[in-house]
Length: 304
Image (cartoon, rainbow, N blue to C red; front, side, top):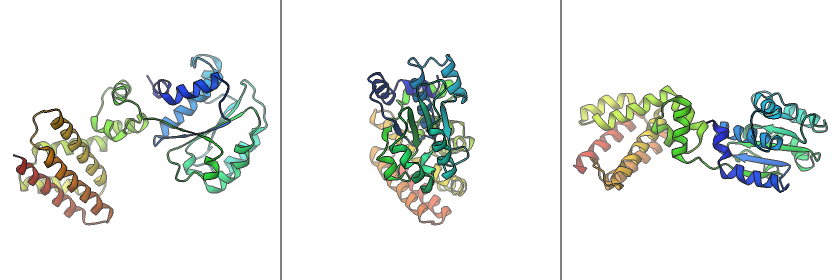
């Protein structure tokens, strides 16, 4: 199973598929989710569907689209970000008739990183494209996408994947799954995979688990604080600590044995939130870590 297979089972694709069947699809779509890889895969899936009703992945059209060699499916930007030269490239290709397909499809990735000038350059083409042209634009956020672009496109917000399906996908892809990666990825497969394969993230996950299992005295706090307070990965460790107590809260709700109470976990969440505020305010990291870990230890003993 790959990301395209996951997407085929989702509501976003099913809705698009129905529009194709009734011939009511738009000439321009803006696909949005925080996951770059997910967005790109969805655009590829739509291009496949527009060329192959069954999305078989074996016919000439499917093979060429998947290999990036289909003459009627063009991907931009040609370098890192979509700039004016990319917009000019799109415009030059607009009136070139399709060679193998009924449509000329333009996939534009990471449009949230496009320059304002490039976005403005594309506006007329989005508003009045040739009849056989379809734009599949994706972005991880709409904050930097011009309102004039948004008003000229149909927005598709990709939904997160069911976490159990995501676990199965990650295990098949990587042979293992880190539950913290599942939580951090929030249902988005590309993001989850990156966390699951990131050794620094995995090391931080193990470090947080070690704290919860083995921190029993103020002496231990000093030991763990020296590592926790390292600037690189500090915010990630805070998030992982929050995830860890989220999981403990689930255990408590299920009636499982736990050394913390529901009220104690609520107190710890407050301490983590305070630590995050201090981090954003550029306070001393050693002091933030010391206060946070001592606070957790204090709550742990109150709960006993």
